[in-house]
Length: 209
Image (cartoon, rainbow, N blue to C red; front, side):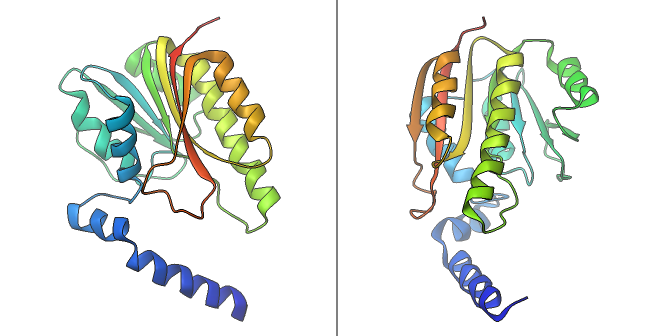
């Protein structure tokens, strides 16, 4: 590791350890500081209701599933999926694998039925290389995959909430989301770091073509 990279990593670690949301997540037993982003989105946009069927894409380490599952009640279902493993959560069905692959899709459909999902959540982000253009392209690719999944599996009137990084391709992606949903809001939760270009799109009233 170069001296510059080492200094940069040490600075990031120091900021991370001092972060209010990191400290609060540890105090409350949340798996990640991202939990606070979903809490705020849900308070503002009423995403999660009892009895829903929800899919959490790129769920590991489980911060969003941990918040969402108790809100769904006894009759709700939550399917979490990631290419990384995730420690079990009560009443969460975790599928390890790539959600683009047929066995994972079939397993999701077996749990909730085809086109029977009420809400698709995506807090996915790529492993960052530090090259802005490459990172933006990789991030947007994940967003497009999440949107394709939502369009294929949401029920009519369903909701999609996803992390997107503003930059090249963002406006085109926003346009594609707006074409499929009745309303789209852009949110910047307080737990999102101020210098980050991340925002969350909350898209409601899916229109199946």
